[in-house]
Length: 390
Image 1 (tube, rainbow, N blue to C red):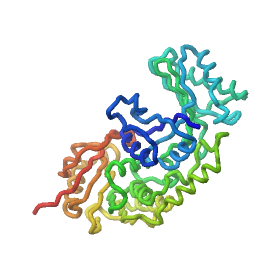
Image 2: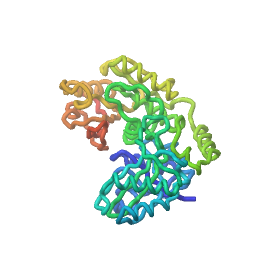
Image 3: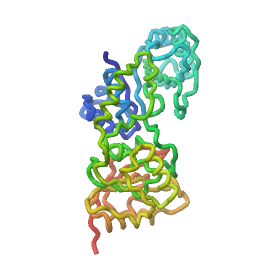
Image 4: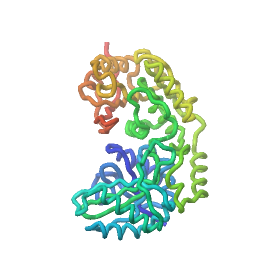
Protein backbone atom coordinates (compact mmCIF):
# COMPACT_ATOMS: atom_id res chain seq x y z
CA UNK A 1 0.00 0.00 0.00
CA UNK A 2 1.34 3.41 -0.96
CA UNK A 3 0.82 6.74 0.76
CA UNK A 4 1.83 10.36 0.36
CA UNK A 5 4.52 11.72 2.66
CA UNK A 6 5.85 15.21 3.20
CA UNK A 7 9.39 15.32 4.57
CA UNK A 8 10.12 18.53 6.46
CA UNK A 9 13.65 19.89 6.37
CA UNK A 10 15.22 23.16 7.49
CA UNK A 11 15.25 25.61 4.55
CA UNK A 12 18.64 25.40 2.90
CA UNK A 13 19.09 21.65 3.50
CA UNK A 14 16.94 20.50 0.57
CA UNK A 15 19.95 19.34 -1.49
CA UNK A 16 21.34 17.42 1.49
CA UNK A 17 17.97 15.73 2.00
CA UNK A 18 17.88 14.82 -1.69
CA UNK A 19 21.27 13.09 -1.36
CA UNK A 20 19.97 11.13 1.61
CA UNK A 21 16.76 10.08 -0.14
CA UNK A 22 18.57 8.85 -3.25
CA UNK A 23 21.09 7.07 -1.00
CA UNK A 24 18.17 5.19 0.57
CA UNK A 25 16.98 4.10 -2.86
CA UNK A 26 14.06 6.49 -3.33
CA UNK A 27 13.62 7.98 -6.78
CA UNK A 28 13.24 11.71 -6.16
CA UNK A 29 14.06 14.47 -8.67
CA UNK A 30 16.58 17.11 -7.60
CA UNK A 31 15.08 20.14 -5.86
CA UNK A 32 14.33 23.22 -7.94
CA UNK A 33 16.21 22.04 -11.03
CA UNK A 34 15.02 21.72 -14.63
CA UNK A 35 11.39 22.22 -13.67
CA UNK A 36 9.13 24.14 -11.37
CA UNK A 37 9.08 22.98 -7.72
CA UNK A 38 5.38 22.07 -8.01
CA UNK A 39 6.14 19.42 -10.62
CA UNK A 40 8.90 17.80 -8.56
CA UNK A 41 7.20 17.72 -5.17
CA UNK A 42 9.79 20.08 -3.71
CA UNK A 43 9.12 23.36 -1.98
CA UNK A 44 11.21 25.45 0.36
CA UNK A 45 11.47 23.37 3.50
CA UNK A 46 10.57 19.92 2.21
CA UNK A 47 9.40 17.48 -0.41
CA UNK A 48 6.24 15.47 -1.01
CA UNK A 49 6.61 11.96 -2.40
CA UNK A 50 4.83 8.65 -2.80
CA UNK A 51 6.09 5.93 -0.47
CA UNK A 52 5.19 2.75 1.37
CA UNK A 53 4.71 2.04 5.07
CA UNK A 54 8.16 0.48 5.06
CA UNK A 55 9.59 3.69 3.57
CA UNK A 56 7.94 5.75 6.30
CA UNK A 57 9.63 3.62 8.97
CA UNK A 58 13.01 3.65 7.17
CA UNK A 59 13.00 7.40 6.63
CA UNK A 60 12.32 8.11 10.29
CA UNK A 61 15.05 5.67 11.24
CA UNK A 62 17.76 6.79 8.80
CA UNK A 63 17.34 10.43 7.76
CA UNK A 64 19.94 12.71 9.33
CA UNK A 65 18.84 16.12 8.01
CA UNK A 66 15.01 15.88 8.10
CA UNK A 67 13.03 17.56 10.90
CA UNK A 68 9.91 15.38 10.76
CA UNK A 69 7.90 13.21 8.37
CA UNK A 70 4.23 13.89 7.78
CA UNK A 71 1.68 11.44 6.40
CA UNK A 72 -0.87 13.13 4.13
CA UNK A 73 -4.38 12.15 5.24
CA UNK A 74 -6.28 14.06 2.60
CA UNK A 75 -6.69 17.21 0.57
CA UNK A 76 -9.95 18.87 -0.43
CA UNK A 77 -11.53 22.18 -1.35
CA UNK A 78 -13.49 23.91 1.39
CA UNK A 79 -15.31 27.24 1.50
CA UNK A 80 -17.08 27.03 4.86
CA UNK A 81 -16.52 25.69 8.35
CA UNK A 82 -19.43 23.27 7.91
CA UNK A 83 -17.87 21.85 4.74
CA UNK A 84 -14.46 21.62 6.45
CA UNK A 85 -15.89 19.62 9.35
CA UNK A 86 -17.89 17.33 7.07
CA UNK A 87 -14.96 16.49 4.79
CA UNK A 88 -12.41 16.21 7.59
CA UNK A 89 -14.65 13.68 9.38
CA UNK A 90 -14.25 11.32 6.40
CA UNK A 91 -10.48 11.04 6.80
CA UNK A 92 -9.06 7.74 8.21
CA UNK A 93 -8.46 8.96 11.75
CA UNK A 94 -8.96 5.52 13.33
CA UNK A 95 -5.86 4.24 11.56
CA UNK A 96 -3.64 6.75 13.34
CA UNK A 97 -5.32 7.88 16.57
CA UNK A 98 -6.50 6.10 19.68
CA UNK A 99 -10.01 6.90 21.01
CA UNK A 100 -9.86 9.97 23.24
CA UNK A 101 -6.19 10.61 22.42
CA UNK A 102 -5.30 14.30 22.88
CA UNK A 103 -4.23 16.01 19.66
CA UNK A 104 -2.35 19.20 18.87
CA UNK A 105 -3.46 20.93 15.67
CA UNK A 106 -1.30 23.44 13.84
CA UNK A 107 -3.04 25.50 11.16
CA UNK A 108 -1.79 27.91 8.49
CA UNK A 109 -4.16 29.82 6.20
CA UNK A 110 -3.15 31.56 2.98
CA UNK A 111 -5.47 33.30 0.54
CA UNK A 112 -8.47 31.21 1.61
CA UNK A 113 -12.08 31.91 2.51
CA UNK A 114 -11.35 30.33 5.89
CA UNK A 115 -8.61 32.41 7.47
CA UNK A 116 -9.23 32.00 11.22
CA UNK A 117 -6.72 29.34 12.28
CA UNK A 118 -8.30 28.70 15.69
CA UNK A 119 -11.68 28.18 14.05
CA UNK A 120 -10.17 25.71 11.60
CA UNK A 121 -8.51 23.79 14.45
CA UNK A 122 -11.80 23.62 16.38
CA UNK A 123 -13.67 22.18 13.35
CA UNK A 124 -10.97 19.60 12.72
CA UNK A 125 -11.07 18.54 16.37
CA UNK A 126 -14.86 18.23 16.10
CA UNK A 127 -14.45 16.15 12.93
CA UNK A 128 -12.04 13.81 14.72
CA UNK A 129 -14.51 13.43 17.60
CA UNK A 130 -17.29 12.63 15.15
CA UNK A 131 -15.20 10.05 13.31
CA UNK A 132 -13.85 8.42 16.48
CA UNK A 133 -17.21 8.70 18.30
CA UNK A 134 -15.25 9.90 21.32
CA UNK A 135 -14.60 13.47 22.48
CA UNK A 136 -11.20 14.73 21.33
CA UNK A 137 -9.20 17.07 23.53
CA UNK A 138 -7.04 19.79 22.01
CA UNK A 139 -3.60 19.78 23.59
CA UNK A 140 -0.34 21.67 23.30
CA UNK A 141 2.41 19.91 21.40
CA UNK A 142 5.48 19.70 23.63
CA UNK A 143 8.39 18.27 21.68
CA UNK A 144 10.47 17.88 24.84
CA UNK A 145 8.22 15.27 26.45
CA UNK A 146 8.96 11.56 25.87
CA UNK A 147 5.51 11.01 24.32
CA UNK A 148 4.22 14.26 22.77
CA UNK A 149 0.55 14.62 21.83
CA UNK A 150 -0.41 13.50 18.34
CA UNK A 151 0.34 16.37 15.97
CA UNK A 152 -2.04 17.28 13.14
CA UNK A 153 -0.92 19.78 10.49
CA UNK A 154 -3.59 21.58 8.46
CA UNK A 155 -2.75 23.97 5.64
CA UNK A 156 -5.30 26.03 3.73
CA UNK A 157 -3.96 27.51 0.51
CA UNK A 158 -6.32 29.10 -2.02
CA UNK A 159 -9.25 27.25 -0.38
CA UNK A 160 -7.54 23.84 -0.64
CA UNK A 161 -7.20 22.20 2.77
CA UNK A 162 -4.42 19.64 3.18
CA UNK A 163 -4.43 17.67 6.44
CA UNK A 164 -1.45 15.60 7.60
CA UNK A 165 -0.46 13.70 10.71
CA UNK A 166 3.07 13.71 12.07
CA UNK A 167 4.71 10.28 12.10
CA UNK A 168 7.83 11.29 14.03
CA UNK A 169 6.66 12.61 17.38
CA UNK A 170 9.55 14.55 18.86
CA UNK A 171 11.48 16.23 16.00
CA UNK A 172 14.07 14.04 14.33
CA UNK A 173 16.96 16.13 15.64
CA UNK A 174 16.15 14.58 19.04
CA UNK A 175 18.61 11.71 18.70
CA UNK A 176 18.59 11.13 22.46
CA UNK A 177 22.26 11.73 23.18
CA UNK A 178 22.38 15.51 23.65
CA UNK A 179 21.07 15.94 27.18
CA UNK A 180 23.65 18.64 27.94
CA UNK A 181 24.64 21.63 25.82
CA UNK A 182 27.45 24.16 25.86
CA UNK A 183 27.11 27.73 24.63
CA UNK A 184 25.23 28.30 21.35
CA UNK A 185 24.46 24.61 20.58
CA UNK A 186 24.06 23.49 16.98
CA UNK A 187 21.02 21.38 16.17
CA UNK A 188 21.90 17.79 15.19
CA UNK A 189 20.14 17.97 11.81
CA UNK A 190 22.08 21.12 10.89
CA UNK A 191 25.35 19.50 11.95
CA UNK A 192 24.58 16.51 9.73
CA UNK A 193 23.69 18.85 6.87
CA UNK A 194 26.98 20.71 7.24
CA UNK A 195 28.89 17.42 7.08
CA UNK A 196 27.03 16.27 3.97
CA UNK A 197 27.26 19.66 2.24
CA UNK A 198 30.98 19.97 2.98
CA UNK A 199 31.73 16.95 0.82
CA UNK A 200 33.30 14.95 3.66
CA UNK A 201 32.75 11.25 2.92
CA UNK A 202 33.71 9.81 6.30
CA UNK A 203 37.02 8.41 5.09
CA UNK A 204 39.41 11.34 5.75
CA UNK A 205 40.45 12.86 9.08
CA UNK A 206 38.11 15.48 10.53
CA UNK A 207 38.92 18.21 13.04
CA UNK A 208 36.46 20.47 14.84
CA UNK A 209 38.52 23.02 16.86
CA UNK A 210 35.39 24.72 18.28
CA UNK A 211 33.44 21.59 19.16
CA UNK A 212 31.31 23.00 22.01
CA UNK A 213 28.94 20.23 23.14
CA UNK A 214 30.29 17.95 20.41
CA UNK A 215 27.42 17.86 17.93
CA UNK A 216 29.54 18.00 14.74
CA UNK A 217 32.05 15.28 15.75
CA UNK A 218 29.29 13.07 17.18
CA UNK A 219 27.23 13.34 14.00
CA UNK A 220 30.41 12.65 12.03
CA UNK A 221 31.03 9.47 14.03
CA UNK A 222 27.43 8.32 13.54
CA UNK A 223 27.74 8.98 9.80
CA UNK A 224 31.07 7.25 9.23
CA UNK A 225 30.00 4.23 11.31
CA UNK A 226 26.66 4.08 9.42
CA UNK A 227 24.69 4.21 12.66
CA UNK A 228 21.03 5.06 12.04
CA UNK A 229 20.31 8.31 13.91
CA UNK A 230 16.86 7.12 15.01
CA UNK A 231 17.89 3.74 16.41
CA UNK A 232 17.53 4.70 20.09
CA UNK A 233 14.24 6.60 20.10
CA UNK A 234 10.52 6.11 19.73
CA UNK A 235 8.26 7.55 17.04
CA UNK A 236 4.64 8.63 16.87
CA UNK A 237 3.79 5.98 14.26
CA UNK A 238 4.41 3.30 16.89
CA UNK A 239 1.07 4.31 18.45
CA UNK A 240 -0.87 3.90 15.21
CA UNK A 241 -3.19 0.91 14.78
CA UNK A 242 -1.37 0.24 11.48
CA UNK A 243 2.00 -0.12 13.21
CA UNK A 244 3.76 -3.34 12.21
CA UNK A 245 6.23 -4.32 14.97
CA UNK A 246 7.63 -7.19 12.90
CA UNK A 247 8.45 -4.91 9.96
CA UNK A 248 10.03 -2.37 12.31
CA UNK A 249 12.17 -5.09 13.88
CA UNK A 250 13.32 -6.23 10.45
CA UNK A 251 14.35 -2.68 9.53
CA UNK A 252 16.21 -2.05 12.78
CA UNK A 253 17.98 -5.41 12.50
CA UNK A 254 18.98 -4.54 8.93
CA UNK A 255 20.28 -1.15 10.10
CA UNK A 256 22.27 -2.76 12.92
CA UNK A 257 23.86 -5.21 10.48
CA UNK A 258 25.14 -2.28 8.37
CA UNK A 259 26.91 -0.58 11.28
CA UNK A 260 30.70 -0.53 11.40
CA UNK A 261 32.43 -1.41 14.69
CA UNK A 262 34.53 1.77 14.71
CA UNK A 263 35.12 4.99 12.82
CA UNK A 264 36.93 4.65 9.51
CA UNK A 265 39.02 7.79 10.05
CA UNK A 266 40.35 9.97 12.90
CA UNK A 267 37.84 12.44 14.36
CA UNK A 268 39.45 15.12 16.55
CA UNK A 269 37.41 17.57 18.60
CA UNK A 270 38.77 20.34 20.77
CA UNK A 271 37.65 23.51 22.53
CA UNK A 272 39.23 26.03 24.86
CA UNK A 273 36.24 25.62 27.23
CA UNK A 274 36.94 22.72 29.59
CA UNK A 275 33.28 22.55 30.61
CA UNK A 276 32.25 22.21 26.97
CA UNK A 277 34.67 19.32 26.47
CA UNK A 278 33.23 17.52 29.51
CA UNK A 279 29.71 17.96 28.10
CA UNK A 280 30.83 16.78 24.65
CA UNK A 281 32.39 13.64 26.12
CA UNK A 282 29.18 12.87 28.03
CA UNK A 283 27.07 13.35 24.91
CA UNK A 284 29.39 11.13 22.86
CA UNK A 285 29.17 8.44 25.53
CA UNK A 286 25.35 8.51 25.35
CA UNK A 287 25.59 8.27 21.54
CA UNK A 288 27.95 5.30 22.03
CA UNK A 289 30.66 6.82 19.86
CA UNK A 290 33.04 8.10 22.56
CA UNK A 291 35.69 5.62 21.43
CA UNK A 292 35.60 7.12 17.91
CA UNK A 293 36.37 10.72 18.87
CA UNK A 294 39.47 12.22 20.48
CA UNK A 295 38.30 15.10 22.68
CA UNK A 296 40.91 17.55 23.94
CA UNK A 297 40.82 20.73 25.99
CA UNK A 298 43.04 23.02 23.95
CA UNK A 299 43.06 26.36 22.17
CA UNK A 300 42.84 26.69 18.41
CA UNK A 301 46.57 27.45 18.16
CA UNK A 302 47.39 24.12 19.84
CA UNK A 303 45.57 21.80 17.42
CA UNK A 304 47.70 18.87 16.27
CA UNK A 305 46.42 17.56 12.92
CA UNK A 306 47.39 14.10 11.66
CA UNK A 307 49.75 13.81 8.72
CA UNK A 308 47.01 12.74 6.33
CA UNK A 309 45.15 15.63 4.72
CA UNK A 310 41.57 15.94 5.87
CA UNK A 311 38.76 18.34 6.73
CA UNK A 312 38.28 21.19 9.18
CA UNK A 313 34.53 21.44 9.83
CA UNK A 314 33.43 23.78 12.59
CA UNK A 315 30.90 26.24 13.99
CA UNK A 316 33.09 28.91 15.61
CA UNK A 317 31.74 31.84 17.64
CA UNK A 318 30.10 34.72 15.82
CA UNK A 319 28.74 37.93 17.26
CA UNK A 320 25.05 37.26 17.80
CA UNK A 321 25.59 33.79 19.28
CA UNK A 322 28.13 34.39 22.06
CA UNK A 323 30.61 37.07 23.07
CA UNK A 324 28.44 39.66 21.30
CA UNK A 325 30.31 42.48 23.05
CA UNK A 326 33.69 41.29 21.80
CA UNK A 327 35.35 42.00 18.51
CA UNK A 328 35.89 38.63 16.83
CA UNK A 329 38.08 39.87 14.01
CA UNK A 330 41.24 38.69 15.77
CA UNK A 331 39.78 35.22 16.28
CA UNK A 332 38.97 34.84 12.59
CA UNK A 333 42.40 36.16 11.62
CA UNK A 334 43.86 33.52 13.92
CA UNK A 335 41.69 30.80 12.31
CA UNK A 336 43.23 31.65 8.94
CA UNK A 337 46.79 31.85 10.29
CA UNK A 338 46.58 28.56 12.21
CA UNK A 339 45.02 26.65 9.32
CA UNK A 340 47.59 27.94 6.82
CA UNK A 341 50.42 27.01 9.18
CA UNK A 342 49.15 23.63 10.36
CA UNK A 343 46.62 22.39 7.80
CA UNK A 344 47.87 23.31 4.31
CA UNK A 345 45.94 21.43 1.65
CA UNK A 346 43.08 20.60 4.02
CA UNK A 347 39.46 21.19 3.10
CA UNK A 348 37.57 23.61 5.32
CA UNK A 349 33.87 24.25 6.06
CA UNK A 350 32.98 27.03 8.51
CA UNK A 351 29.50 28.06 9.61
CA UNK A 352 29.27 31.81 10.18
CA UNK A 353 26.84 34.71 9.87
CA UNK A 354 29.29 37.30 8.53
CA UNK A 355 31.16 37.72 5.25
CA UNK A 356 33.15 40.37 7.09
CA UNK A 357 34.43 37.95 9.74
CA UNK A 358 35.16 35.26 7.17
CA UNK A 359 37.14 37.82 5.19
CA UNK A 360 39.51 38.18 8.13
CA UNK A 361 40.57 34.53 7.74
CA UNK A 362 42.04 35.44 4.33
CA UNK A 363 41.05 31.96 3.21
CA UNK A 364 39.50 31.64 -0.22
CA UNK A 365 36.09 30.34 0.78
CA UNK A 366 32.82 30.17 -1.14
CA UNK A 367 29.27 30.09 0.22
CA UNK A 368 27.69 26.67 -0.29
CA UNK A 369 24.64 26.80 2.02
CA UNK A 370 22.36 29.42 3.53
CA UNK A 371 20.66 28.33 6.74
CA UNK A 372 19.12 29.60 9.96
CA UNK A 373 20.79 28.58 13.21
CA UNK A 374 19.06 29.57 16.43
CA UNK A 375 17.04 32.20 14.58
CA UNK A 376 20.17 33.74 13.00
CA UNK A 377 20.76 33.60 9.21
CA UNK A 378 24.09 31.84 8.63
CA UNK A 379 26.07 30.51 5.71
CA UNK A 380 28.45 27.60 5.23
CA UNK A 381 31.76 28.74 3.79
CA UNK A 382 33.82 26.02 2.09
CA UNK A 383 37.15 25.79 0.33
CA UNK A 384 40.70 24.50 0.59
CA UNK A 385 43.53 25.85 2.74
CA UNK A 386 46.40 27.05 0.62
CA UNK A 387 50.01 26.71 1.75
CA UNK A 388 51.34 29.66 3.69
CA UNK A 389 54.11 31.67 2.07
CA UNK A 390 57.17 32.86 3.91
